[in-house]
Length: 434
Image (tube, rainbow, N blue to C red):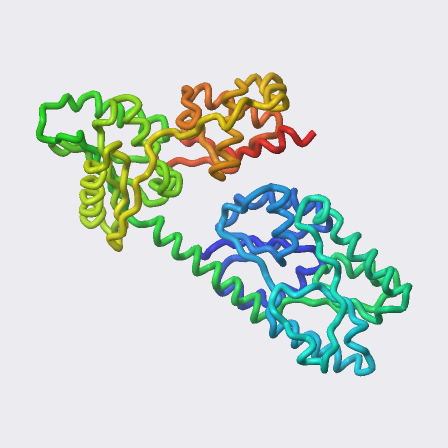
């Protein structure tokens, strides 16, 4: 099945990107997501990002805007960028068409790659647009600032030509009667970006398809031990998380089988094992857990056994992972690890009253995003981190959604046995944006 890639681009750039469409479509299914204004860019991203396996932004500018406005882009992504060869090719074309022009009377975007203009043009270099601050005010007004600078220099008769990457600026330049040339990555440069992103996604697909095995044991497997409570705890965790694990008792251990994709979710990207934390809370620190990855069940279980030995040696019995290359990852923290960074501020306390969420839980949620960069939660995830019941966690997510601080980005059903559950993207900043 072909990869699905969404290209987020200004309306006026769509036709330029289509020059490489035939070659891109051989690698993936491409959908163009166009915007005509910065405000619309945010809407386009938020309404469509979840539909695709990867995203490409038509330049660094829209990418930086989304990061500053919405937050970190978690999905595999890239952006089209001008290479040094693109700059030289574009300038050579300009100088051929405008043979009379003085290079120092051209204003253009500052290159993102090293370009030694003075060596190429006998000590001359173009004027560059003032740097656009990558904070919200700077990015929001980028088009206006660039136009103001162009108009001022044109009226002062200091420039003869504007060369820009901002396609949505060209209409304003045309109406003002200012000559311009549009810079845009070449088809070859764009294809390099698409190929690289597709390769990363394919590799991630391969990793996700690997078998993940877990082995759960009491730290003294030869001692007498009542395994019924451990069995009940494993079943309860599995039920709360949508039944992602196949659980089998094998003498004095429990064998778990799932996919690498699910394992990455359970361990928060191999950093914090929610299952270990859950078992330690219910049964104490005597429970050990090792995870293994492999191309088949035999190799994954072998690696899980090696990881289990490390968990047994660890004083706090944190979980470990051994991957298919034999590399060890861990220890993975087993506790919730979310403590208050300080007394909730007056604003946080006021917002918690409006939401009907305790100030402590709202502050913990803020800390999760600020200090750990975690913003995707199911009710089971939030239950784990806030140490509340899944029912209370679901109520919190619904309250956040009601006030614009969370939205459902997808539903997940690990297998046909479990009920689907919703994954929310939480952004506490939107609660305070008013």
